[in-house]
Amino acid sequence: MSFPWAKNYEPVNPVMKFMDEKLPLPRLVYNAVGAGYPVPRNLSYWWNFGVLAGICLVLQIVTGVVLAMHYAANSGIAFDSVEHIMRDVNWGWLLRYMHANGASFFFLVIYIHIFRGFFYSSYKAPREMIWLLGVVIFLLTMATAFMGYVLPWGQMSFWGAKVITGLFSAIPLVGEPIQVWLLGGFAPDNAALNRFFSLHFMLPFVILGVVILHIWALHIPGSSNPTGVEVKQESDTVPFHPYYTAKDGFGLGVFLLIYFMYVFFFPNALGHPDNYIEANPLSTPAHIVPEWYFYPFYAILRAFTFDFIIPAKLWGVLAMFSAILVWFFLPWLDKSPVRSGHYRPMFRKFFWFGLIPCMAVLFYCGGAPAEEPYVMISQIATAYYFLHFLVILPIISSVERPEPLPFSITEAVLGSDDSAVIEPAAKAAE
Amino acid sequence: MASTGTADAHEAATEDGVRRRDFIEIAAVSAAGVGGLAALIPLISQMAPSADVLAESSTELDISTLEEGQSIKAVFRKQPVFVRHLTPAEIQAANDVDVSSLRDPQTLEERTEDGHHNILVVMGVCTHLGCVPLGAAEGENKGEYGGYFCPCHGSSYDTAARIRKGPAPKNLEVPTYEFTTDTTIVIG
Image 1 (tube, rainbow over the protein chains, first blue to last red):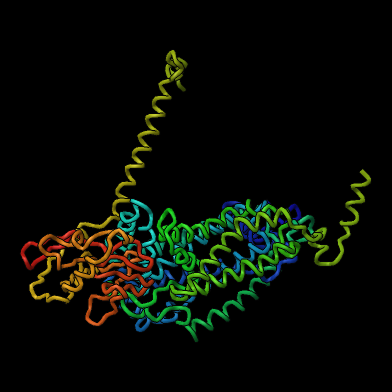
Image 2 (cartoon, rainbow over the protein chains, first blue to last red):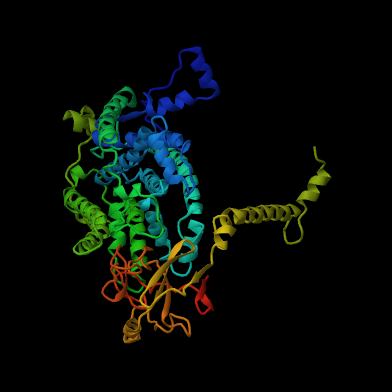
């Protein structure tokens, strides 16, 4: 499960020796995130975001559990109980702003983590399972965030719940019964609010479980690195602790500075003012939008305005879910043997000038009103999005001529690697 | 320790090679499987609307004071219902339309009760993504077809609340209702 040169855990004091014999938990931690885990020596700051995502999850669980001690999941008093947290509960304003902004920052970190994976093809063998579990985590996080946004029972909560559960009504025949079953009524009400609270409390622990599987799967091949060349020898790696605990610690400090700048100075900048109006089933806000982190997918949903064999509404729903499900197939769509975008000239161009602008456009259109020219721009961007993954990536991987790779991580870092010279010579001698 | 005799009895196979133990295994696993599936029924069914939610599913309305050209917004199953007393001009406008040209072809006659074709009862829920359309209250935007207009994604409905323009796939839904007297309707 690890490289042969990984340091072995040797407890010194009797308590730790006792512990190691009965329940080797310290050994597990030592081998997972301690000196016992050898990591490529050349990881850039883009590799900080996995650890940051884990920290965000813990932050959300801790603030969420304490908020649940004061929140009331009842449609009659939910809105007031949130104001009670803001005004009356000791430090309630801080805990709630940390939780609400924490969700935004969690998604920011996850998106960077995912796009790091896109650029460095982190999904390729032997790391397919890590990628698949990562997509599962992303889907679970989206569901959790959506249900959490419903809990304050403001106008955006209510109409968001109505529109999103309304997506299921697009399914032929069984759609409307499914929507009624999901809501426990004919429109969002107390039954829906209660179950969303229950699931919003439970799902983060499911996410935590899948995160553990994600890390477990990661530790089998070990971390990827910016060259995409696999670890060959001890000089390619450094122990996780203290090298990357320090680097991750520094990254965490920067992250917390930016995060708390929002929590303290712009706590509502990422939210929507309509959600401070209590839910009213008889009046729709003029402009319904989801939270910013769903904009790209909301744009894809709304890009379908014409019936073609199946109704436009169903196309939109299918496209929105497919936009994420297509990630599951990435390990098999991109067949290039070279991982890192640094050595793939054509892939790199389509990443920076294709995928990234496409996502930026979808992001912008998802937050814009559903009118021209935004609808047509969303349609073009949606078409490119699917074209990129389903057509462009497979074609690039067969026609592209990658640049020469370094012999090893050591060579990439130091400019030369002694074993690069010795090894071919030894091979020739055989 | 089991005697060899008992062991033989357990291992004894019928002529076609089936042991008694095979039967017991299949029976036990089947019972556990069926029991497991049965346990899902309450877990899934509890999410469906509860008895008190279903009990709210009828609404009685008195429309004796509803003048021509007026609408009322009522609540049915916690969703808005629009009841409109159509003017002759609105009825005329609805009947002038070539029904076959509509996205969801229906005549005004089909969408209202016999003897009360001037009373239009529809759910105030846009068939696109469920927003509440404008047009029921005085002074609200009725859209370019003079009926209802959804501000979310721009769907326009005509005087018979039929979809004429925009992304909504269907006409505003007519709930099941009946006139219990000439001036009282019961929805649901």
